[in-house]
Length: 130
Image (cartoon, rainbow, N blue to C red; front, side, top):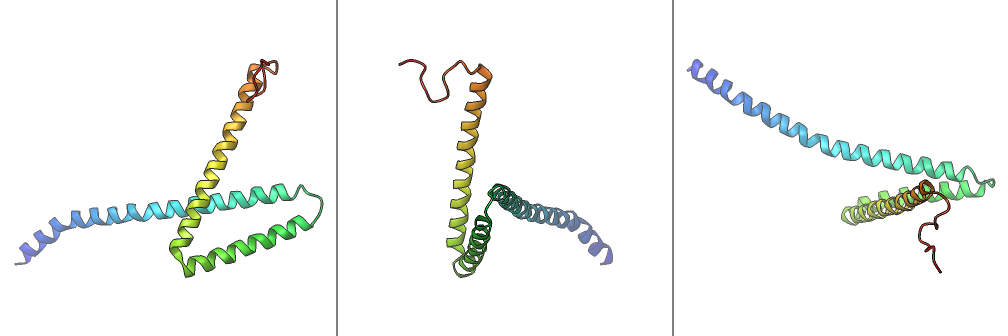
């Protein structure tokens, strides 16, 4: 009887290991997604702060701090009260941000190509005739 129990435990062990590995893989994706969101959030805040620090008056920094705090508190309240609506808002803002980055990148790339061709050509978006 002991030999049969030993054989059963030996054969079920690899499948348990595979199940644990599969569970570990699924736990990595949400962690990576959370890290990506945190990195993007930090980059956005740091970039905004860098832009705001170039303005000479202190009022813009105060307004920015108050706006950031309001958005955070409002976002947390929305996430706690209505998580599905908060998810839609986050996804919509993420898509809008991605679209904005794509449009800015496209405009910058057109400008770089125009500079590489030489300044004698017409600027991007303008025809050289008429």
